[in-house]
Image (cartoon, rainbow, N blue to C red; front, side, top):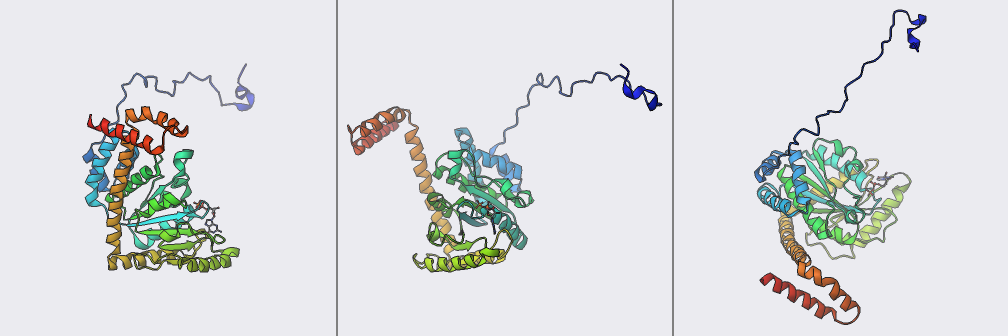
Length: 362
Ligand code: GDP
């Protein structure tokens, strides 16, 4: 049949039959030898990081997070070589229950500190839920819309593999790499649940706890906080937020005075409407000056290094024990005996430990 556009009404316009087009997929693609991605050497990583190359930094963080022993070996060397370039930063832990407004706030906080204090900001996270659910609820780039596209920021979600101790150690190591790459402001975000708050507290200079009005009896994490901020102090919620601030101020008297000599402050703000954000950060920087003057800043960082030395030993001993093939083979049997009441827990533990130490001597 003739093409409709070739009829009289379309004089001067002739539509020809098409010709066969070549495939848009390269037919030789599979025949071509695949170029193996060149693996970076330790010095490539270190050089890239120290130059502030964010792609190399990301790759190094991936290495730190990897469970493969060969990756870990390289990662540890990279960290060691980056250590002399690290430490020159302000590290702030930010905690709060889901819904407290952490991501909204971090977006605004991040932009504020970059604007007011310059430099570069890395946002890391410790998310105890990420292992269980395989989905991180923290540190997701899309949750911090403005910061995630800011040229001076680096956002990295929580490492997901392993125990909380393992996850926290990786985040701490990532801090070293970020600092070596010139990030002089580090935020470590976590959800307000016991152990993960302790882990974050053990790697930051200032621990900021985000609370909401109506949770005035919620004391979780308060003993660690250097500052408590009540979010959503806007609109109808303003009065309730102010009342909550008073309640938290009173509750702070229940805790022993902090070693730092600093009296934790309670402030209200609104992340969403960007109200009171400057005051929050003036407080953080005032604290940093205060503890730098009285020597507590140095002291806390040294104590943290000591803590992480022991944490690393504990973690690696545990790993070595539970991954020992002989122990793996015995474990369920012993557990059964204990459950059935045929063996006391102490004897079972002793048998297993004796076996482990004997294995080490072989
Ligand atoms: P996260 O789970 O702690 O990260 O909390 P989000 O930042 O996701 O915030 C939870 C909800 O609270 C969202 O619906 C936000 O829009 C809202 N929200 C956060 N900050 C404020 C605020 O300052 N005022 C008000 N009214 N709502 C806020």
